[in-house]
Image (cartoon, rainbow, N blue to C red):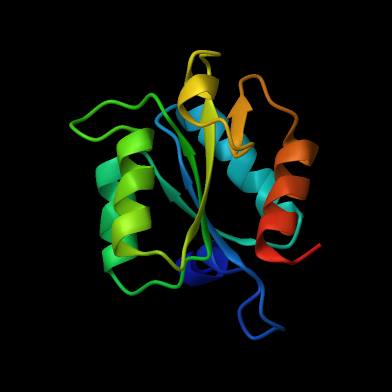
Amino acid sequence: MSALAQILPHAGKAWCPTILVTEDEVLVRGVVADHLRDAGFAVIEASNAAEAVDVLQSGEPVDLVFTDIAMPGIMNGAMLARWIYLNRPDVRVVLASGSADSAQTFPDGRLFLKPYDLDDVESHIRRALGWA
């Protein structure tokens, strides 16, 4: 399978949303990305917020970013979400965290606490994109 086919497995088919999964834990990122691909989404993976910003600035079509809050580097997931709101308001954001304290920072229901149920994440993403 070509690299493009791995990133965009539904290329040439009817439109499907593209999800940018941003997670520094490679195993978690892989499980989430594989689940979303199996669910019919196009998925791009980033290991930190800086990589995610690079993707978002590249012109690559991204409909939603699913990001962990706690990540290494100068920008964490919360800062990435703020960057997206300011620079790419067309992109929706869903956050995940291993800390319940994060729920106080993002009380509007877009935060999934780890360990989260992948089917719940998928359902929320579908609703957020109107692709239910």
